[in-house]
Length: 175
Image (tube, rainbow, N blue to C red; front, side, top):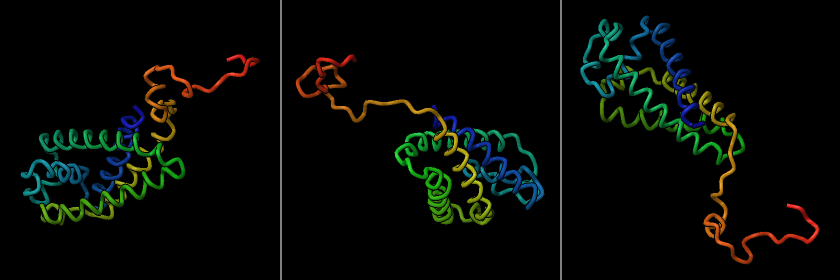
């Protein structure tokens, strides 16, 4: 649950920054949305600059669903991964993971779809990734943790009573 919450919160931070880029740099809030839709809907990338800056219901729906699904899955990954790094989880979630992810996408997208890669402002893209990672990481690490029994022996988890699996009690202790 912490990962899903983190992914959703991070998705909002990322969307706000990406849309701010669209307004400030390109002059349209729809530009980054249409570029995201172009990952799955190739017709979006073939649009000219005027069409990329305008609203398209199909591209918006594709971008919304794609952004939501990927954000939830990455948030779940953060929910599983960040508690394993008790020292400086925001460094990993907010900077290292986004830098690795952005580098991977930059390399593969340049090979798979050079036209789409040429239309992405990679500095703003990395800033959006970092915004996602910081917000998602903060939400995940601030969620209450629940003790798990993953490090307990199988016999103890299965309820098997065997000598040596339980600590011995002194006669005067009350447990």
